[in-house]
Length: 129
Image (cartoon, rainbow, N blue to C red; front, side):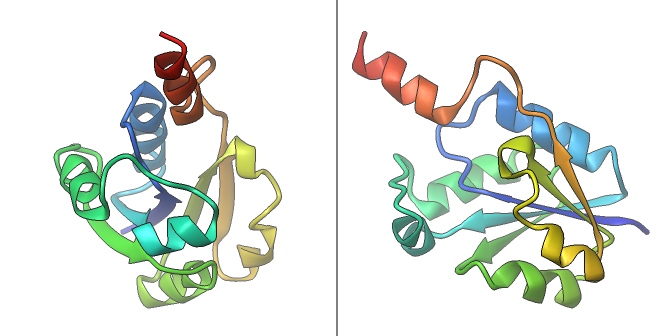
């Protein structure tokens, strides 16, 4: 069984998120999503509209997702790869090169983002509406 792992905040769920999850799942048999906690988002300078629990419920409803785990720190990626015997780490292309140090543990693939959509853009569009 090939295990794939990806991470994110997944706030204001949109087609870009679904595309990433669908394409990540297609790379293996089992998709784990590391969902950033509210506390870790604060460390990253992010504020999600939905709480961690709400974002988790939304992700659980997506057929591509097999397991959701908490991401509490940058170091969790290395720990989770080992703990869950991950074969492939998938990240969006906006993170290109940032996790190449994990190639000693698994394959790292950066998938292109969906053009024209992002949580930041949605927030800006709503603010300007």
